Image 1 (cartoon, rainbow, N blue to C red):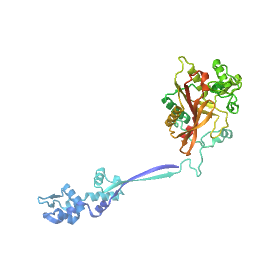
Image 2 (cartoon, rainbow, N blue to C red):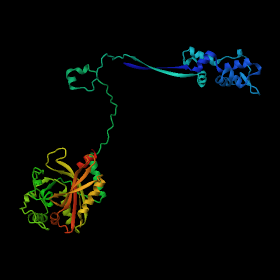
Image 3 (tube, rainbow, N blue to C red):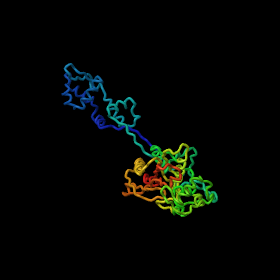
Image 4 (cartoon, one colour):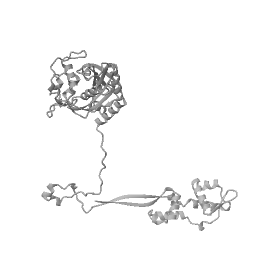
Length: 427
């Protein structure tokens, strides 16, 4: 169909204009009263009493303007023309407009302006629409095809199928610059907080580690269940690492077999082939142990340090709502002289306070390479209960002594997953 908008404009007379058409204009009424009064004229109050206050106000002004009357020294108004010498132009214009159906062309612009100034007429615009059948009119709606398909070409149906018109000049919807993944946002936030606390980031870009750095250097026995294939992803090729520091390896082996630093060890035969197995790291503590070894054997001797890492770790676990076989671990450690459990708790509270978790509890726990060890619980405001959010402890002497760290150096450490606080933040 074709739609055409029609617009018509015309003037309509107001209530005052209708009164003028029937009885004459206000100035004619005032002039008639003054002529009837004679040469003595009328005072303002007498004139208002005869024609009315509203008619007197408008008519007197126009009579004086048209020089049909004059005001004497005593304030009275006196007519100076006869009725047959003047004509009621306003009434004639309104009658002409009314007879012409309000057509703006029935009066010239000057007369229209004069009548509009006295608010006797107003312009009205009436809009309407004309609807007619177009050349493609149909009694049923036919959906136009947007694409030319193979089926249309094979059957020849494209010849009779109506298609939508293509606009080849359109630019299409503007493409944004993309958004950061929630994990990356929280990771950047944690990284900034840890750097503000004076921590330095550890190099964690190597996902494949040897069992020696991932387990043995942490004083975790080779018979521990976590080292089973059901919990760890072992690498088939290359299956074993090439090199570990031999002197340090011997000290770790001795600590496992016979003990030291007040420990009796695990009292088993430490196997080299087990220590050299390659695997996908199960925690970033494998990197922490290497950093502590370098810290103990650096030129100039040990210097206190703070390290952190945020990177991927891998566990051979069945995936469900709370477990993944690949996730991110946040880990921090402080190596300094004579640190205590109070230093560990204070550091943890400071970190979690900065990420918005203020209600914390600590519960004693067991870890193979930390003693004492603590699980960290935070209060979840939505679940209304305490939820485990991390683990912590002080590295055992059996782990630190083979590295060559001084006897009075203590290392406090803590860790948590990146996914769990991200899920809480974007719940």
